[in-house]
Amino acid sequence: MTQPNLLVIGSLNMDIVVQTARYPLVGETITGENVHFIPGGKGANQAIAAARLGAETAMIGAVGQDAFGENLLHSLEKEGVDVSGIKQVAGVATGVASIYIAEGDNSIVVVPGANNRLEFADIDRNEALLRQADIVLLQLEIPEETVLYAASKAKIFGKTVVLNPAPAKPIPDELFQLADYITPNRTELGRYTGMETDGSSLGFAMQRMKEIGEAHIVTTLGSAGSAYIADDGSIQTIPGHKVPVVDTTGAGDCYNAGLAISIATGRSLEEAVNFASLVSALAVTKFGAQAGMPTIAEVRAFEAERNKTGADQA
Image (cartoon, rainbow, N blue to C red; front, side, top):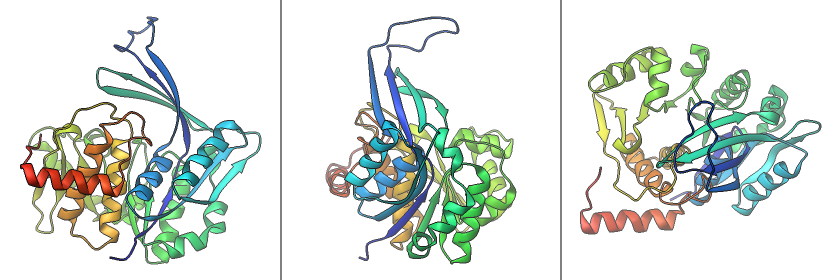
């Protein structure tokens, strides 16, 4: 099978991860258990996930000329990601995400920093990376106008565009119309459509999002798995996998990388969703967004064990 070529255009952040037994109440001070400084950002997470899953991976993004920026670049290079498209911006701090982990889940506050300096010129300057990519993977932690411009150029070159519309924010319908695949989680789906996403309402909300741009819609549902709209218009659900949860940070990013790689290798949407479900399940079994990204060997072993034992899904 030909090695897929994936281009990620997105954010790089230093994650400052604080572990606590519980979340503090408003106005309350509690004592945390641990603090870690971990390379992150949705774009960088997806790039490292893709590289570990066997894709030839490049990234376009921006960091500051500071220690955090150097650390992030080193982290990507160590995993074999092409960082030639990442610029270092003078006088601007590298993006930071403050992540609080408690009770098996997380909450996140992001300060974009240099991510907000990714501009049209940066996309143009790295046109060669766009031309060689099979798939372009985008998120929304960089300026939305830059995301729109990147998607437009990708389509000019005939590339498949996967849009992970996170974090949810007001964006023009044109961006949805440029995407070939859109991957909101349940909360993001509700915000973009203004509809309920529980129970039978999920399918109606997914159909509403499809009407905006006619893209393939895949919705992640956390531990419940994921859902997608099949070619016949039906809503199909893939259950999640039962695994010991250590850290959910980055699971969605891993899912998107797995989905994009599967699509690039010519798998059907059903096969791609199943593969993405496997890789994201493994991601939550380790601490740290990037550290938790599984290798393709780990995924194959996990899949083989599931098939051998007939392990239940969630």
